Image (cartoon, rainbow, N blue to C red):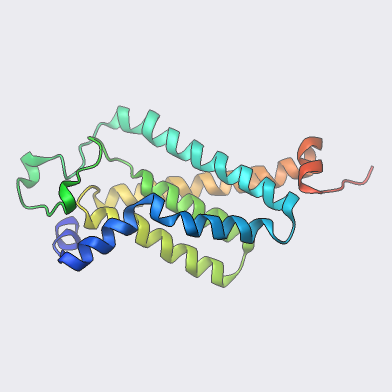
Length: 188
């Protein structure tokens, strides 16, 4: 499947996927999401943004600092013994040495799942799922991840998002600091 997706390369699709994979290209989306989260109730929204930040930090560190060094599986772009010159690399990009599981996949699906749980609308579910699939899937097109890397990363990100969403709900109901930040009032 990697070779099939990577083999779809064309000069115009290379440039699109190069932009899609770049996390900085999505800053306007992140800013728009932050505004949309904070606008109705800034205290509740601020709590949500804090938990999203903690979620992304936890997912990223778990994969980059714990799982990847232990597993140590080469990215396809670095595995010349298996692929030789058969992979199309956009702009010579190879990524870091190890790629299992995918941080792009984990972070994309963590954010998407958290937003879906927070808003609970079909529009949020459709939009965020499509974005996460495109963002994470671009890594297969670029030849820097196997599809399994993306799948496992997506599962890790989704699991962490569910955990952090529940943790946010728990803390806003039970911890006085978060009650005052989120505006939740608990009857005495």
